[in-house]
Length: 560
Image 1 (cartoon, rainbow, N blue to C red):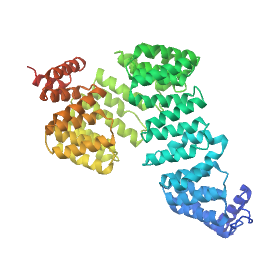
Image 2 (cartoon, rainbow, N blue to C red):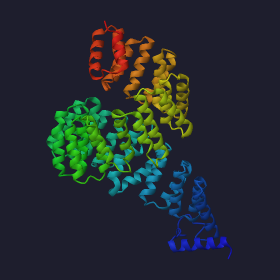
Image 3 (tube, helix red, strand yellow):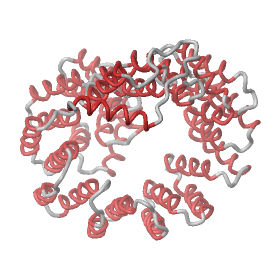
């Protein structure tokens, strides 16, 4: 028998034994293929070969054609999934529509069709599919909880809110439906509607922690104190609401209310009855609170209770030891981390300790000895080594290392950015500008590139109009970034717009008391006639960062 006939015969036997059965010929649209004939085997085989060779658009088209001819839902499913993986949205949408038609009871098919229709921006056609998903009582609640994730990329948030309100209308007593309205309203900046929906959800499910956590998040934008008061009142009414207690503790930590957070840590651990996961989270909160001995206690408690990722806790314990100036102890914890998910993080953490206590060269030698790294990990190691050299003021060595990396490794956005920054430190400003423009072209959404280029122009007092445009673009891409706010404030300072300069620099400093932001803010205030406030900011910053070159030079320049 010729070889090709053997292959085809094997495939036919495979289908026969796998239980493939095509749609009943009594269906309204009759299948053109009702058995595993030569045409079916040929097309299916071509689809399989195309998929194996990476020709996914062709494979999805072949499976879709077969699905239409056989009226078999499984082939439509295969076509939809292959097309989605191949980033062929039009084909995926057609296949998903056929899949839902052939298997109308399939939740997965309806989800796929809904996702694809929503992704295409076609909310009108997506609505019937979503409604079908919500008809099923056993999946309805989760469907509403997932709804805003499904719709998150839609630009018209008001349209999304109206759609969610319409979908929720048939279920007035379902708390998840009101929760979905609250989420959509929040994204549409309709805070009053969001609050009202959450209050309705609370009436239908008193003590519901999911709704309470979202209510706290909404209040946080108004005032962190409002969030804390809300959580405190909720916990008084529902003292066993540990998810809300965790959110309360995290908010206290974020607001530096450490003494108030401590009792919440203890309550969480006590109520968890020895849960290693809770002990680990409380340990991390304690670490963020600079309560290092408490952090160590909870991390070690989690280890004794059998925490499933001990290497992660070794990493945290090492960081805690570093904060306590115990470098020997830190290295001991880092050395416990075995090859696996946290190994490279541990080696990089150890390298920073070695560079500080011995030398950058010793740290780099240790990092160079790590084997079997992926390309991404190699880039991370090189970035770390360049940073260690820069910290040691060996800027030329760092530049040469990064230059070699961009010439020998695939150019990721992070690699190009770091190369540009090392070029700036050695005065190779043309290279810096060239690389940052290249990065902006490569990644138009990379805010740090616009910011670095704009700030460089402002710092050199050149191209100030372009600098302002660049930094404003960066701020649109990353509106809460204090470093970008600092850059925009500095651009305004260079332009002579002191009121706007002070406004942006003050905002940046309120978010992060960075020494260089303090230097800029102080200088803007001084020029704006507010010398006493400028002096106070410099004095406070110098106490915390006495060795920062920019801050020291700025304060010295204006010292009277």
